[in-house]
Amino acid sequence: METIAPEAEILAAATNPPEDTRAYFRGKLIHHIPHLIDAANWEAVTVFGHTIPMPEVTTHTKQQTDPLLDLLPDNIPAFIATLNNNGMVN
Image (cartoon, rainbow, N blue to C red; front, side, top):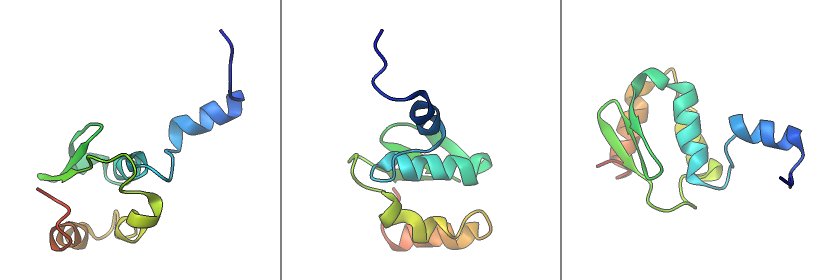
């Protein structure tokens, strides 16, 4: 089998999701508040009973979600309120 990326890059990718995809937000949620994650899959994350749909790969990027992630893990109520206020949950 041919390796197309250096091993260090592969190892880094295992713990650092791409910043320009929904994987960034999902990965950061799992890192910051694993105890509040009810479910996670490719297209949604359920946090404390609130499902955050992420149907498009190019949404929920670092640029779009870092202000929201800055609330974690210390201010869960503000995080949930911001999700609700911005229509980000079902």
